[in-house]
Image (tube, rainbow over all chains, first blue to last red):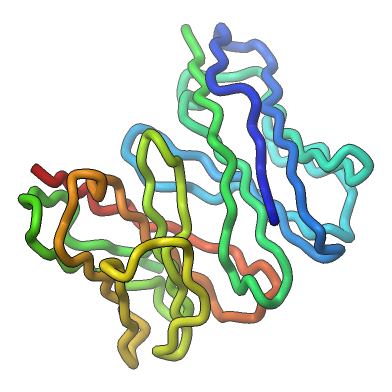
Amino acid sequence: AQKVTQAQTEISVVEKEDVTLDCVYETRDTTYYLFWYKQPPSGELVFLIRRNSFDEQNEISGRYSWNFQKSTSSFNFTITASQVVDSAVYFCALSEDYNAGNMLTFGGGTRLMVKP
Amino acid sequence: KAGVTQTPRYLIKTRGQQVTLSCSPISGHRSVSWYQQTPGQGLQFLFEYFSETQRNKGNFPGRFSGRQFSNSRSEMNVSTLELGDSALYLCASSLAWTGQGETQYFGPGTRLLVL
């Protein structure tokens, strides 16, 4: 069965620090998809990135970067030069192959607090 | 393009009552999924609808049901409410049901409190 683990339940940093959020997943499928979502206090989940299992290239988008390593089943998320507006709960999620449709299995989330 | 909308945003019910939540997907999106978020269990998948058919269902009792209309709008219903049903219910839409990890875009959620 699929599983996503976010071992860090809460992280506190000071503005401008770099921070990495860890995500480890388990799946028996060879084709799968990984996602990161941000949940600000308003509650809505905001999509950040989607990655398929065949694309191990790291990705950078502004201050955000993602490191996907199949060898360690990890899909970590780094925020460079953090800002107060980055304070939120971040979720890593996994979607498996055809039979699962679009169903997402979420990790427990990491609450990031960025202090000024 | 307007995002996913959910109504109502907040709801207070008492045990034993039933509730219906509504979700309108992003225009052009035909797949709708529902998730329950609680502090104890986190985010859990309820069900997914595509072309008015339930395609997948999570591990929830039969009191939780849903449907999808021809315009892709979806409703979920919870009958005989229990205190443990208090949660944030999130709806997500995606373009289609391809089995290829379509990106899901979430609405603001309906916060249900059962007293």
